[in-house]
Length: 132
Image (cartoon, rainbow, N blue to C red; front, side, top):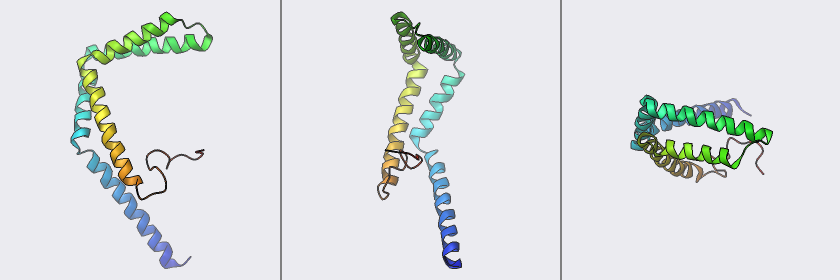
């Protein structure tokens, strides 16, 4: 490998990293991203939602432990599902989940645009090591 080739490769790496940083910065200006950030901030600052999240996490943890020991019941599962439904029905959480879904769709479209000229799914498999 020649010195010119090595320098050109280093420049290309720097250019790609700079473009990736620019893409990340641009994504943060998307309306979908802003809506997601706003909705997340509301969820984080609403005490009732935070209490329900804590309750859900506690019940989920209890269910996971019971399942590991074989002691989980159908009633335990139903309690977990009910608590999750109650959490998701809270307006701030419902708005957050919708904003998250819209952002995920937009990011998937960007992933497809990036992946189109590549031989791999950029967002899905590029980071994996042992894909079958």
